[in-house]
Amino acid sequence: MAVSSSVDSNIFNIRVGLPVPWLLYSSFHGFAPVAVSSNRLFCSFVLLFIMLFFFIISIASCKWKLNKILGFTMFLLYFTFLGLSLMLEYIIVCPV
Image 1: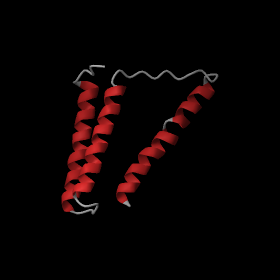
Image 2: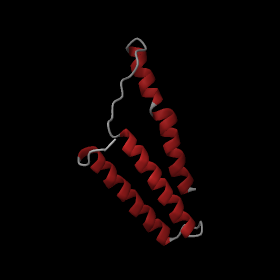
Image 3: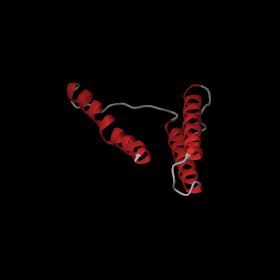
């Protein structure tokens, strides 16, 4: 349930957390489009899918059971993702 909750919370954030503030902003500004600019968006998107691949591989390698090794692996994957995301934002220049 915890793994499913972590995946579902991201889906909820994408479906509600992004559109509602943008809708409110545009409604106060005459429904003008909201400009979103990020040069690193594509690299972040690719990083997300790479981490999803490792996430599924780590769960499958633990035979779909949550144990201490899988818990440690999840912490490691999370901190790796966090570190790489911060480096993409502030240090590494996205080649695309």
